[in-house]
Image 1: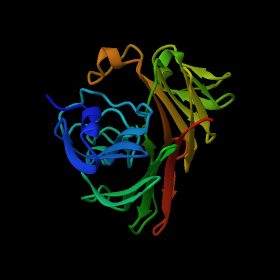
Image 2: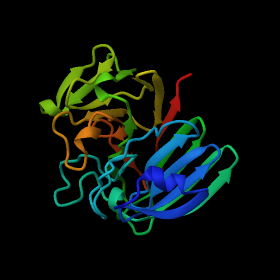
Image 3: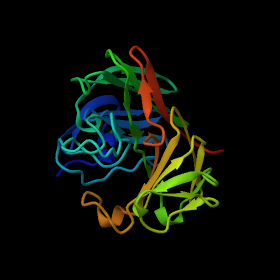
Image 4: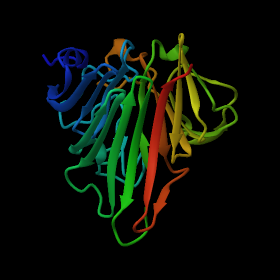
Length: 283
Protein backbone atom coordinates (compact mmCIF):
# COMPACT_ATOMS: atom_id res chain seq x y z
CA UNK A 1 0.00 0.00 0.00
CA UNK A 2 1.37 3.42 -0.94
CA UNK A 3 2.23 5.90 1.77
CA UNK A 4 0.00 8.92 2.27
CA UNK A 5 1.21 12.39 1.45
CA UNK A 6 1.21 13.25 5.15
CA UNK A 7 3.45 10.24 5.89
CA UNK A 8 5.93 11.29 3.19
CA UNK A 9 6.06 14.78 4.68
CA UNK A 10 6.59 13.50 8.22
CA UNK A 11 9.52 11.40 6.98
CA UNK A 12 11.13 14.39 5.24
CA UNK A 13 13.49 16.93 6.73
CA UNK A 14 14.38 19.55 4.16
CA UNK A 15 13.53 18.31 0.69
CA UNK A 16 13.78 15.08 -1.30
CA UNK A 17 12.35 13.08 -4.18
CA UNK A 18 9.91 10.32 -3.26
CA UNK A 19 7.22 8.07 -4.74
CA UNK A 20 3.50 8.33 -4.01
CA UNK A 21 1.17 5.78 -5.69
CA UNK A 22 3.86 5.23 -8.37
CA UNK A 23 4.02 8.99 -9.07
CA UNK A 24 7.38 10.70 -8.70
CA UNK A 25 7.01 13.65 -6.33
CA UNK A 26 9.24 16.28 -4.75
CA UNK A 27 8.62 16.74 -1.01
CA UNK A 28 9.58 19.85 0.98
CA UNK A 29 9.23 20.10 4.77
CA UNK A 30 10.85 23.18 6.29
CA UNK A 31 10.35 25.48 9.28
CA UNK A 32 7.86 27.64 7.33
CA UNK A 33 5.68 24.70 6.19
CA UNK A 34 5.40 21.84 3.71
CA UNK A 35 4.78 21.32 0.01
CA UNK A 36 4.53 18.37 -2.40
CA UNK A 37 4.65 18.69 -6.20
CA UNK A 38 4.33 15.83 -8.69
CA UNK A 39 6.67 15.58 -11.67
CA UNK A 40 3.61 14.49 -13.65
CA UNK A 41 1.80 17.65 -14.65
CA UNK A 42 3.92 19.93 -12.42
CA UNK A 43 0.93 19.38 -10.14
CA UNK A 44 0.99 20.84 -6.66
CA UNK A 45 -0.57 18.19 -4.38
CA UNK A 46 -0.04 19.64 -0.92
CA UNK A 47 0.64 23.01 0.70
CA UNK A 48 0.46 23.69 4.43
CA UNK A 49 2.06 26.52 6.39
CA UNK A 50 3.61 25.25 9.63
CA UNK A 51 0.94 24.37 12.19
CA UNK A 52 -1.92 24.51 9.65
CA UNK A 53 -3.87 21.86 7.77
CA UNK A 54 -3.35 21.29 4.06
CA UNK A 55 -4.91 24.14 2.07
CA UNK A 56 -5.40 21.79 -0.90
CA UNK A 57 -7.39 18.56 -1.26
CA UNK A 58 -5.95 15.57 -3.13
CA UNK A 59 -7.64 12.20 -3.49
CA UNK A 60 -6.07 9.40 -1.42
CA UNK A 61 -7.02 6.95 -4.22
CA UNK A 62 -5.64 8.33 -7.51
CA UNK A 63 -5.90 6.50 -10.81
CA UNK A 64 -2.74 4.54 -11.70
CA UNK A 65 0.01 6.51 -13.40
CA UNK A 66 0.01 7.99 -15.98
CA UNK A 67 -3.66 8.76 -15.32
CA UNK A 68 -4.56 12.31 -14.36
CA UNK A 69 -4.25 12.99 -10.63
CA UNK A 70 -7.41 14.41 -9.08
CA UNK A 71 -6.78 17.15 -6.57
CA UNK A 72 -4.20 19.77 -5.71
CA UNK A 73 -3.77 22.20 -8.60
CA UNK A 74 -3.93 20.43 -11.99
CA UNK A 75 -2.68 22.41 -14.98
CA UNK A 76 -5.28 22.39 -17.76
CA UNK A 77 -3.30 23.48 -20.84
CA UNK A 78 -3.38 24.27 -23.80
CA UNK A 79 -7.11 23.72 -23.65
CA UNK A 80 -9.71 23.63 -20.93
CA UNK A 81 -13.01 21.93 -21.66
CA UNK A 82 -12.86 22.74 -25.37
CA UNK A 83 -15.25 20.87 -27.64
CA UNK A 84 -12.85 20.58 -30.60
CA UNK A 85 -10.25 18.28 -29.01
CA UNK A 86 -11.81 14.86 -29.64
CA UNK A 87 -9.28 12.07 -29.17
CA UNK A 88 -7.01 14.26 -27.03
CA UNK A 89 -6.65 14.11 -23.23
CA UNK A 90 -9.41 15.90 -21.32
CA UNK A 91 -8.30 19.41 -20.34
CA UNK A 92 -5.06 19.33 -22.31
CA UNK A 93 -1.71 17.57 -22.44
CA UNK A 94 0.07 19.36 -19.59
CA UNK A 95 -1.45 17.53 -16.64
CA UNK A 96 -0.30 14.05 -17.68
CA UNK A 97 3.04 15.11 -19.19
CA UNK A 98 6.36 14.75 -17.36
CA UNK A 99 7.85 18.00 -16.08
CA UNK A 100 11.38 18.63 -14.82
CA UNK A 101 12.21 20.61 -11.72
CA UNK A 102 14.65 23.18 -13.15
CA UNK A 103 15.36 25.21 -10.03
CA UNK A 104 14.52 25.39 -6.34
CA UNK A 105 15.27 28.68 -4.60
CA UNK A 106 15.06 28.10 -0.85
CA UNK A 107 15.23 30.82 1.76
CA UNK A 108 14.31 31.11 5.43
CA UNK A 109 10.79 32.41 4.74
CA UNK A 110 9.76 30.03 1.94
CA UNK A 111 10.59 28.49 -1.43
CA UNK A 112 10.29 29.15 -5.17
CA UNK A 113 10.18 26.28 -7.71
CA UNK A 114 10.54 26.45 -11.51
CA UNK A 115 9.29 23.62 -13.75
CA UNK A 116 9.17 22.96 -17.50
CA UNK A 117 7.89 19.98 -19.53
CA UNK A 118 10.49 17.45 -20.67
CA UNK A 119 8.91 17.21 -24.16
CA UNK A 120 7.12 19.77 -26.37
CA UNK A 121 3.38 19.92 -25.66
CA UNK A 122 2.35 22.19 -28.54
CA UNK A 123 3.76 23.09 -31.94
CA UNK A 124 3.90 26.83 -31.16
CA UNK A 125 3.39 27.32 -27.43
CA UNK A 126 5.78 26.55 -24.58
CA UNK A 127 4.64 26.57 -20.92
CA UNK A 128 6.53 26.92 -17.67
CA UNK A 129 5.39 26.98 -14.05
CA UNK A 130 6.59 28.98 -11.05
CA UNK A 131 5.40 28.04 -7.54
CA UNK A 132 6.06 30.44 -4.65
CA UNK A 133 5.14 29.39 -1.10
CA UNK A 134 5.75 30.65 2.41
CA UNK A 135 4.09 30.61 5.82
CA UNK A 136 1.30 32.98 4.76
CA UNK A 137 0.54 32.50 1.08
CA UNK A 138 0.77 30.38 -2.05
CA UNK A 139 1.21 31.69 -5.59
CA UNK A 140 1.16 29.54 -8.74
CA UNK A 141 2.07 31.02 -12.14
CA UNK A 142 1.51 29.36 -15.52
CA UNK A 143 3.49 31.26 -18.16
CA UNK A 144 2.90 30.54 -21.85
CA UNK A 145 5.41 31.72 -24.47
CA UNK A 146 4.67 31.83 -28.19
CA UNK A 147 7.76 30.37 -29.85
CA UNK A 148 6.15 29.75 -33.26
CA UNK A 149 5.58 31.79 -36.42
CA UNK A 150 1.85 32.51 -36.65
CA UNK A 151 -0.74 33.94 -34.22
CA UNK A 152 -2.53 31.29 -32.19
CA UNK A 153 -5.00 30.96 -29.32
CA UNK A 154 -5.56 28.67 -26.36
CA UNK A 155 -7.62 28.16 -23.20
CA UNK A 156 -6.34 27.07 -19.80
CA UNK A 157 -7.05 26.73 -16.08
CA UNK A 158 -5.45 26.29 -12.69
CA UNK A 159 -8.02 23.70 -11.56
CA UNK A 160 -7.57 24.28 -7.81
CA UNK A 161 -9.11 21.85 -5.31
CA UNK A 162 -9.47 23.71 -2.00
CA UNK A 163 -9.74 21.70 1.22
CA UNK A 164 -12.88 22.50 3.29
CA UNK A 165 -14.66 20.97 6.27
CA UNK A 166 -17.99 20.68 4.46
CA UNK A 167 -18.58 21.82 0.89
CA UNK A 168 -22.26 22.42 1.62
CA UNK A 169 -21.42 24.91 4.38
CA UNK A 170 -19.03 26.92 2.20
CA UNK A 171 -19.78 30.50 1.17
CA UNK A 172 -17.95 32.26 -1.67
CA UNK A 173 -18.05 36.06 -1.71
CA UNK A 174 -17.10 38.33 -4.62
CA UNK A 175 -19.26 36.96 -7.44
CA UNK A 176 -22.49 38.88 -6.74
CA UNK A 177 -23.81 40.42 -9.96
CA UNK A 178 -21.41 38.45 -12.19
CA UNK A 179 -22.69 36.75 -15.33
CA UNK A 180 -22.06 33.03 -15.57
CA UNK A 181 -22.61 30.05 -17.82
CA UNK A 182 -24.30 27.13 -16.09
CA UNK A 183 -22.76 23.99 -17.60
CA UNK A 184 -25.33 21.77 -15.87
CA UNK A 185 -28.10 23.59 -17.76
CA UNK A 186 -26.62 23.54 -21.26
CA UNK A 187 -24.42 26.63 -20.72
CA UNK A 188 -27.45 28.79 -20.00
CA UNK A 189 -26.38 32.34 -19.11
CA UNK A 190 -27.43 33.59 -15.67
CA UNK A 191 -26.51 36.27 -13.13
CA UNK A 192 -25.28 35.50 -9.61
CA UNK A 193 -27.54 36.80 -6.88
CA UNK A 194 -25.64 37.47 -3.64
CA UNK A 195 -22.92 35.22 -2.24
CA UNK A 196 -22.52 31.70 -3.61
CA UNK A 197 -23.42 28.63 -1.57
CA UNK A 198 -23.25 25.02 -2.70
CA UNK A 199 -26.33 22.85 -2.34
CA UNK A 200 -25.46 20.03 -4.76
CA UNK A 201 -23.72 19.51 -8.08
CA UNK A 202 -22.38 22.79 -9.44
CA UNK A 203 -20.36 23.65 -12.56
CA UNK A 204 -20.27 27.33 -13.49
CA UNK A 205 -18.03 29.63 -15.52
CA UNK A 206 -18.22 33.13 -14.06
CA UNK A 207 -17.15 36.07 -16.22
CA UNK A 208 -15.21 37.79 -13.47
CA UNK A 209 -11.67 38.82 -12.58
CA UNK A 210 -12.49 39.92 -9.03
CA UNK A 211 -10.74 38.43 -5.96
CA UNK A 212 -12.91 36.02 -3.99
CA UNK A 213 -13.30 35.15 -0.33
CA UNK A 214 -14.01 31.54 0.60
CA UNK A 215 -15.56 31.02 4.04
CA UNK A 216 -15.37 27.49 5.46
CA UNK A 217 -16.25 27.23 9.13
CA UNK A 218 -14.02 29.70 10.97
CA UNK A 219 -11.45 29.80 8.14
CA UNK A 220 -11.46 32.54 5.52
CA UNK A 221 -9.27 32.24 2.45
CA UNK A 222 -8.64 34.98 -0.10
CA UNK A 223 -8.39 33.83 -3.73
CA UNK A 224 -6.92 36.36 -6.14
CA UNK A 225 -5.66 35.94 -9.70
CA UNK A 226 -4.03 37.57 -12.70
CA UNK A 227 -4.46 37.08 -16.45
CA UNK A 228 -7.94 35.58 -16.17
CA UNK A 229 -11.48 36.85 -16.72
CA UNK A 230 -13.10 33.47 -15.98
CA UNK A 231 -13.61 31.99 -12.50
CA UNK A 232 -14.84 28.40 -12.51
CA UNK A 233 -16.59 26.93 -9.46
CA UNK A 234 -17.16 23.16 -9.46
CA UNK A 235 -18.39 20.45 -7.15
CA UNK A 236 -19.71 17.07 -8.35
CA UNK A 237 -22.56 16.75 -5.85
CA UNK A 238 -24.06 13.27 -6.16
CA UNK A 239 -22.23 12.65 -9.46
CA UNK A 240 -19.03 11.64 -7.70
CA UNK A 241 -16.16 10.49 -9.97
CA UNK A 242 -14.76 7.05 -9.16
CA UNK A 243 -11.42 8.36 -7.87
CA UNK A 244 -13.13 10.32 -5.08
CA UNK A 245 -13.96 8.13 -2.04
CA UNK A 246 -17.50 8.67 -0.75
CA UNK A 247 -16.24 9.95 2.60
CA UNK A 248 -14.11 12.59 0.84
CA UNK A 249 -16.79 14.02 -1.43
CA UNK A 250 -17.70 16.96 0.81
CA UNK A 251 -14.14 17.91 1.74
CA UNK A 252 -13.26 20.02 -1.31
CA UNK A 253 -14.51 22.79 -3.57
CA UNK A 254 -12.87 23.74 -6.86
CA UNK A 255 -12.34 27.46 -7.42
CA UNK A 256 -10.36 27.89 -10.61
CA UNK A 257 -8.53 30.73 -12.32
CA UNK A 258 -9.20 30.12 -16.01
CA UNK A 259 -9.19 31.46 -19.54
CA UNK A 260 -12.24 29.84 -21.15
CA UNK A 261 -14.47 30.39 -24.17
CA UNK A 262 -15.37 33.70 -22.49
CA UNK A 263 -11.77 35.00 -22.55
CA UNK A 264 -9.70 32.86 -24.92
CA UNK A 265 -6.06 33.99 -25.04
CA UNK A 266 -4.62 35.10 -28.38
CA UNK A 267 -0.86 35.39 -28.72
CA UNK A 268 1.35 36.82 -31.44
CA UNK A 269 4.77 35.26 -32.15
CA UNK A 270 7.30 36.30 -29.52
CA UNK A 271 4.70 37.25 -26.89
CA UNK A 272 3.70 35.55 -23.66
CA UNK A 273 0.78 35.28 -21.22
CA UNK A 274 0.79 34.93 -17.44
CA UNK A 275 -2.01 33.14 -15.58
CA UNK A 276 -1.62 33.11 -11.81
CA UNK A 277 -3.61 32.25 -8.71
CA UNK A 278 -2.80 33.62 -5.27
CA UNK A 279 -4.10 32.01 -2.07
CA UNK A 280 -3.79 33.62 1.35
CA UNK A 281 -5.54 33.64 4.72
CA UNK A 282 -7.86 36.58 5.29
CA UNK A 283 -6.80 38.35 8.49
